[in-house]
Image (cartoon, rainbow, N blue to C red):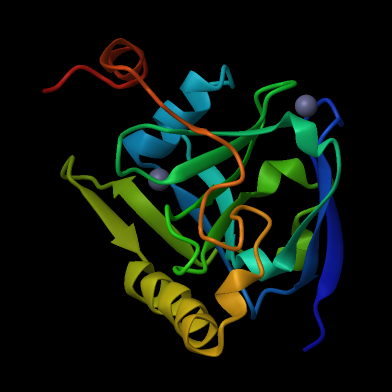
Length: 193
Ligand SMILES: [Zn+2]
Ligand SMILES: [Zn+2]
């Protein structure tokens, strides 16, 4: 199935780009209830998603193109080894999560940045859902992980991982990675139970 080119933008419209050739079958729509995704939104000054989830579409960096306002692109991480949280400095919109290495061709796009997310299909996976017994679990989680690997592995072997707007050809992030301080981290996580 041929995918669609979908324009996206930060909330204020300065940072714009396009998802290239995306479809329900070449990516995975998911929602995540985890503390990290919530902390990411809070640190960026966004509305608290809890008790709801953040909505994402799991795709690959070679399907991401920035078109304008790239000077607004910035990145932080919740910890030294955490995912990279790419956002728009202008308004705080979280745009993408990626791995720390371009060799793992993975980009999780925040679908709130689309005017219409229906071309991406229905939500197929729910991560870190709070169950009736109070524990957190996944729905569709294995399939979701399989899809991430199934997209990343051929790109690693075929060299397509090098097509990314997030990293330079020598594997460095295109922006300096800001790592939260302990104080900043404490402000956006619930107290340890
Ligand atoms: Zn903005
Ligand atoms: Zn999450």
